[in-house]
Length: 349
Image 1 (cartoon, rainbow, N blue to C red):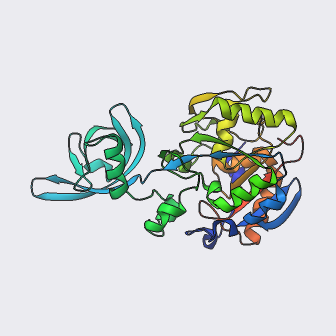
Image 2: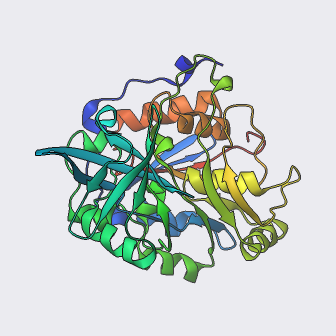
Image 3: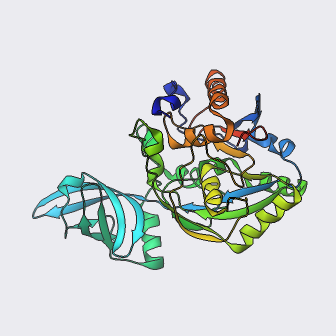
């Protein structure tokens, strides 16, 4: 299975830099086996069935990009930091320029927020901040900006609007440095309408890491090593999903992050169990899905692990047809782009 099998040509103009407004007016490509139709997210009220259960990732994106300065004598130099994950000695982070930052140096981000470089490797560093707990959260909210994906950040800087746009309406647990973007299409009104129809919801937590944007660098994709991300499936969430399966309802994760988490927590017979820890599950064609019946997801980068995941769900030929259709019809791609609802033929996944 070669990396080039998951490549395609994407016109630059189809990369979205702002979301649709209102959120639910994004376009929705509905793929039911071999059948493709062009809809909108607000049409989900007519597409989902009573008894379906949507699995939502309730992680909350932190304003993880910081712009600071370090000083040596009279010389002051700027440093750009992207927080990755908290560790025992501080926050693991990326730095630009990394090579010019030394261990022991202090980086100042605002009057309230500064950090000492506690450790440094060839790829990242560890920052020990002067503040912790609620004080740190408040200072970070003031000094930080939303960590937009590289393909958006290359076109424009993050602004105050992104603090709303790049956050789901059900974000509860802070820790992600990238959004579960399929969930950005929901607003409170749509959630209420779906609930009134009899659609059920289960929340899980997977803190999306910056590794979600890392390219695959091996030609044989089966040898790729996935980044690890922390997640939790509570006992109540597992019970809800298992009850829906027993009743014959469909389990539909909203986003690849929710899908990867519940597949990590499921036993081979499809039973979901309470689970907490880091998952580096890599789903590519040939994977047998344990609990997922369908998936709502945005359109992904060529040669990415996420394209491999949707190919595993729908089949490689079908996903090529779906992406060809999306490009031909002008669907908007990536984090702020349009969405799809992928429902495989029975037996495909």
